[in-house]
Image (spheres, rainbow, N blue to C red):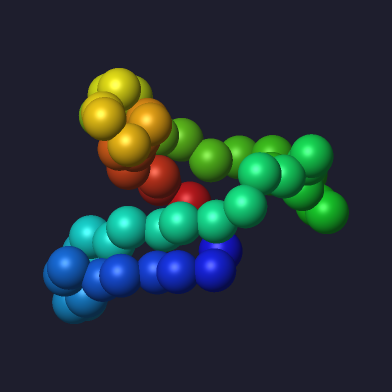
Length: 55
């Protein structure tokens, strides 16, 4: 990512906006991550995604 802005950064809770470049894939495979509250919204600037990961 080339830009990260944290709105909340405290123990057990992070709210941030991450902006980066398109990628073709990851160097390592993610094998066991769960997620919830996944939402994709189209905005005037493009798309906005909100997701909570449990790693």
